[in-house]
Length: 311
Image 1 (cartoon, rainbow, N blue to C red):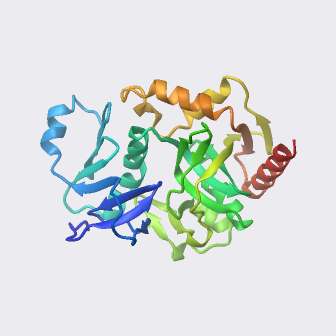
Image 2 (tube, helix red, strand yellow):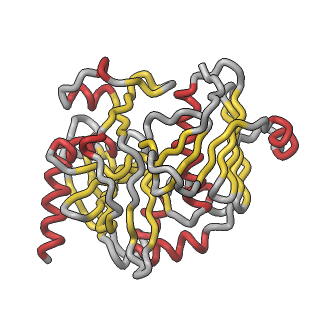
C-alpha cells in the first residue's frame, strides 16, 4: 500500500532531474549530487481545489500551464508549469497504480508544458539515429520494438517519446527510462516467462520488462516514424505517408493530444511538426490482425531504413 516516505529521491528520466517523494523504481537514480531539480513530485491535499474547479462529472481540467485530473478511487493529480506534479491519493491505494499515471499522463503533461513534443509509441536507436514506432493501443508498438531489441538494437523510450528541436530545428529524441510494457501474448511468442516480470496494475496480462542492458542513454536525431495499423489483409505491407497526412499522423499520435487546444499549444504543436517533417520520413506499416507479425515488421522496418539511407 502507499505509504508516505520520509526521504525524497532524485531520479533521471526524459532528460530531466526528478525529485520525488514516492519511490520510482523504474527510473535511474541520479547519484551525482548537487544537480538542479527540473521536476518535483510530491503529495498534496487536492480535494478542495478539485471540487472548486471541477464542473460536473469530468475527469480532466486543462488550462495553460495547468493539468488536473481525477482517477476515481485512486487519486487526484495536478501538473503545473512544467515543473510540479502533486497527487492526492485515496486511502489504501497500491503505489504501482499511482506510478502508472505519474510516469504516463503526468509526465506527458510536463513535457508539453516544457514545449517538448510527446509522441505515443516506442523509440529505438538504430545506427546512431532514433526511429519512432507509433500506433493505436494494441497495434503492437512495444512488441515490434522488443523484436528490434532482440536483433541487438537499443530502446530509447517506451510509451512516451520526448521530441525536442535543437538549434538547427532537427528533432531530437531524449531517453526516457529503461523499461518496456509487453502483453502476455507477446511474452509467450518471444519465449519469455511472465512469472519473471511484474504485472502492471489493472492489466494483469501486461507486464513491466526491464531493459537496462539494452537502453540507449544518448539523445539522438529522429530520422523516421513508422505508424502501425491493423488490417484484415493477411500480408504485411508498408507505404510512405506524404504531404498533409504527415501532419495528421504526428498530431494523432501525440500523447494526450486533447490537452493541446485548452492548454493553448496548438500553434506551437503545428510549428514543431512543420519543422519535424523536413527532417524525417513517415511510413505506415499495415499488419494483419490474425497473427503475430513482429519479426516480419522488424525486417520490413530495417530494410526500409537501409533503403532510405542509401538513397
